[in-house]
Image (cartoon, rainbow, N blue to C red):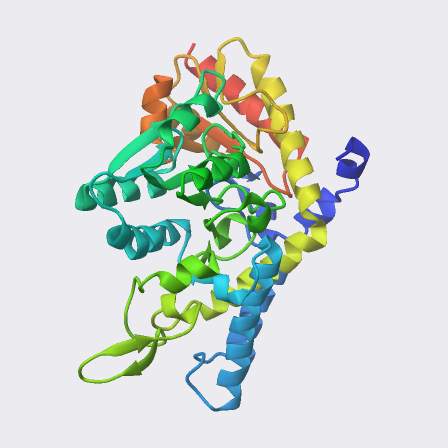
Length: 414
């Protein structure tokens, strides 16, 4: 996308839809650069959820009365809208969960416990989030399967030659992050899916950092499973999405049992509801689904190509500014098409937590720690890193504020 098109993104108008960005801390307006953890929620999403609670708050699929029917239609429509947004074939392939982590666990328990055994392999990458890494570790320990890891090279990219060595005919599942929440690396998930499928393996893609920031088509990727969270894409907390191939989901047993997910129950046995309700036991996140649908409409109204271009432009600017600082180490690839909109870094002689605390004194919100990628940080040889991450409402001036706060930290620790 050209710079002219990027400039057409009216950031000031967008910022007006987020009242929280007007908040001041000790007289200084907040600079929010922690979007990889959670984005803020625009007024159209808040209003959609408020409208649900004010006008048609009711449980779904369980009442004949008018409010329940309205709520049911809205809830089902949210599935349809999300399916369209990610290129799924229909609502049957879209399961609502609490977040990406629960989506990963759903597949690991509902599919992994039943299908994996000694001699099977699960292939992960060294840049996986704990939601993937820990989950598959535990399932492998229970089933006797082996976990293998695709190496990350010195540039912060996956070693694809090593990927081809790791993925074999014994591989049953490959779980890969689409965009690294630490390195910012945009992984070639379609190529990885091709390799996995050539060996008869399934592919689970963690899209928590991808769906909020770039166009995603699960069919084009040829993913068997794909997961993401509402709260990282201008939506509410408490709702996530698991996309699953219809054929695979139909063959899986439920992960949770109870109301809604059943078709018929006797004292002796039970049969399961149709998809996707088979995997949505109990009262679902109805208001959150309404909010997620509104978030999808909101982002598509901006245009996902423009979201991606704006985020990448800010990340490249931050990378340029930070690279000019001789005492700053940046992790991940150089700016380009295979790097997303976040920058993890360290300031020499200043622990990331101390740096984040000084940032907070300047009302600059960043993330510090291992970002749920402890093994990756071990590989990088650091205990923690600071991370600045960007979204549609961030500006170059806010990147400049980040650098000013770094200057203050440098002076304090000189």
